[in-house]
Amino acid sequence: MTFDWLKRYMPRGLYGRAALILILPVVALQLVVSVVFIQRHFEGVTEQMSREVAREINAVMALDWPRNAELAEALRLDFLETSPAELPPRDLRRWYDFSGIVVARTLAEYVAGFQRVHLVDDRTVFVWVRPEGAPLMKIEFNRERASASNPHQLLVNMVVFGALMTLIAYLYLRNQLRPITRLSEAAEAFGRGRHVPYSPSGAVEVRAAGHAFLEMRSRIERQIEQRTMMLSGVSHDLRTPLTRLRLGVSMLEEAERVPLERDIDDMQRLIDAFLDFARGNAGNGAPERTAIPDFVQTIVEDCQRAGLPVTLAAADGQGEAMMRQTAMRRAIENLIANASRYGTRCDVSVALTDKSLRIRIEDDGPGIPPEQRDMALRPFVRLDPARNQDKGSGVGLGLAIAADIARMHGGVLRLGESDTLGGLRADIVLAL
View 1 (cartoon, rainbow, N blue to C red):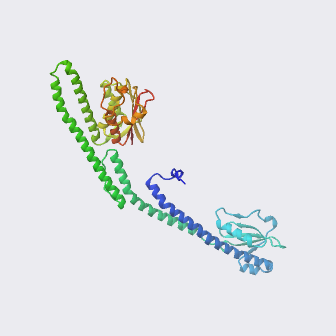
View 2: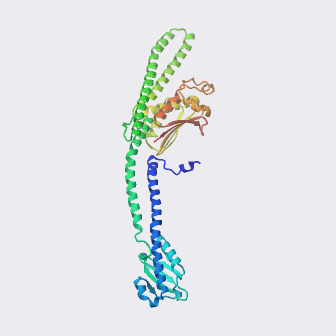
View 3: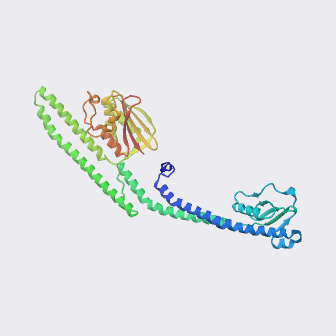
């Protein structure tokens, strides 16, 4: 048996689920106790009291009421004059008078010659009876004689004490869940590239999870720092021998010099890509408020001045977003350069909403097949020669740098097929 259908009705937040775990058993227990108590106490007492009133009515009727008015008065039963025309067509009670159901049922069962009963309020009961061989009679008596009094007190106590216990449980629950919420916020901020101060607190298990998170964060930061230093150091150290090679090659004959200089240029471009990749993972400063779409429009204008065939096609929404401007500029420029390398046209569009920011770069080039898109986001991966033909070999880091920068901002880089230009569509999507 599966309960998957129940998941869509369950709260999604931790507070909601924990509150449901606490409140649902309390409410269910109160309902069960209330139903049992009302059924066993109020219903039983009301039935017993109504049965006693029915016996008194039968006793007065059996002794011929007109000659036993003193007995009826002693039993607090008022016999009123009436006629068959005044007999109501049906029993009457208020819809919320649940104890009245028991009163009417008991009187109808035990009163001889019972005809109708009216429970008009909490004070008075009218009963119409017609014994065999006797005229129709109307009997009035106090409602307190037929049903248990003050049944609302139980409901009032249930509501008051139930609300009080729920409030106490909520306050305790909030204090227990607050450390989990703080841990979640610190982890989410770290995933977006921000370092939020965090100290473990709360229950033993939550403290253990907090310490594990701090250790994991420290290890990741050390690994990123070590990789960045290694890439930067290796790339920097390679520049010196390349410079010596370039000087040595410049003294050769042109026939021998040109292919060697071409190889040196490729190595220089590879080193520059390594440095960009290292800088992309280094963080490039703290996030700052960035005006959208002005920021993207500035990047597009800079690329146009550099001779790239790029235009800002659309800009929906206006506002600000938190981002590392240097890193995001590098990601967008890499995507624009990639689109310009493999196509003759590049369109950039921006869509800003309350929840997300999407920066889209499209080209009219050959695109990337769906089965190769995940591979294209990996570092140092170059696709099939058809895409790279006569366009320069590249080093396979442009998309990887853009993907890393998007992840650094808590977003994602998605590749697809352009609906307007037919080439590659690259979307940087950031959650705000």
